[in-house]
Length: 444
Ligand SMILES: Nc1ncnc2c1ncn2[C@@H]1O[C@H](COP(=O)(O)OP(=O)(O)OP(=O)(O)O)[C@@H](O)[C@H]1O
Ligand SMILES: [Mg+2]
Image (tube, rainbow, N blue to C red; front, side, top):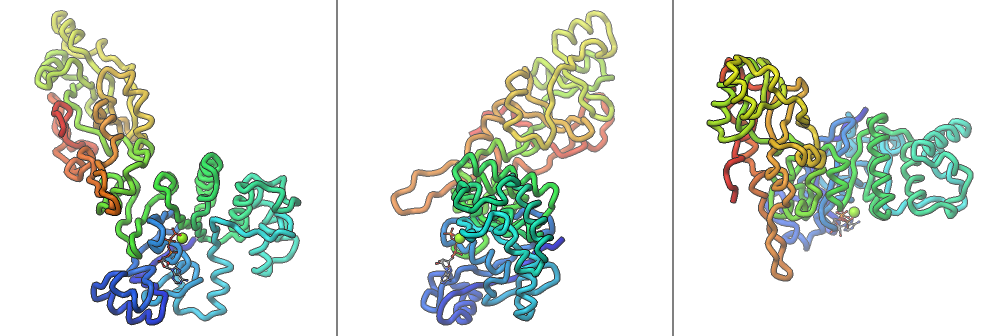
């Protein structure tokens, strides 16, 4: 499989592109160099791993399509290098470039142009014809690709017999039939109505699980970006202003422009338990006995404590009343009073799946790692708080919307803290850093 590298890439359209690049390198802005040309892409650096789904987003005119067209060699950079695997697209001959474009990269556009008088199957087989693949093999591969996108029955139909969504699927089938390592998708789903669009997103994710292609996907829609992308690059005025995972971008937007973008994303689908969990207020050691558990609850001013074993594996919770009874009965252990009915979530659980356990649980929902160890808890208030988008100010007309990251997600919160310590438990390193316990604080 093939990864992609973009190194110091500029693309300027216009009369004197090199002059514009020189000035951009000296710190000029897109506006400053207008007289020499349109700086569509400015000093782009990217490394896209083989098998990664990489999303590029940004407002109209920010340079997304220009960037992706340089990735398939349709346009040569004015400066800088684009590498597909080991091939430097700027250095190869025209014939090599043609061969790379046929064999290594496929592209799907927003308005996919199908050949109107050819069957759906012939349309899907089109890139194979260009590759010089013989007829029988073309037919087989095109049929397979049509089946992958759910159009196996439609091979003999003509494009006009298909709905818009189905025609877009033929576009995807065409790209899949070519069987290239790299798939470039420029607003490929943007013209589809929302339900079909969602279906296509699901289908792409499903296909990607088995195909493992390197996908560069352009979209205006942040929900789509976060749903599909392993990582996301945000472009503004020709520059890449931030690259990161959805969580990184949501929790620490690089600037107001990015913050404005993420203002209306469905955060609960993107953020996971680990990004909002807090340190548990009271943790009792299973072997520690009811008195120790009570003291822990008293110190933390809570009515129940999480119970963990020596390996910090979560066993359940113990309530104060039960611990008091056990103390009166002179018991030395928590045996028989640990309530194990508690639902825990894993660090990777999306917040949307934490609501149900949170509604049922009297205590903050415990978060466990892959070994079942308690690594944090999610109080209901934290869950609700995490849904609030970064605060946006109502802009005066014509001015950009400024936004600040929401307090719960600021970087200070994400910093690792001292390990979780449990009374009565020897102090070994905690399995994972747990963010600060501020469950008792009222946050601004
Ligand atoms: N062939 C071209 N000749 C001149 N200018 C161009 C050309 N292609 C793009 N541009 C300019 O480069 C800038 C970036 O355009 P590009 O199409 O890459 O943006 P985009 O992010 O894909 O926008 P959209 O979301 O509207 O598709 C724009 O200012 C555009 O006008
Ligand atoms: Mg575009």
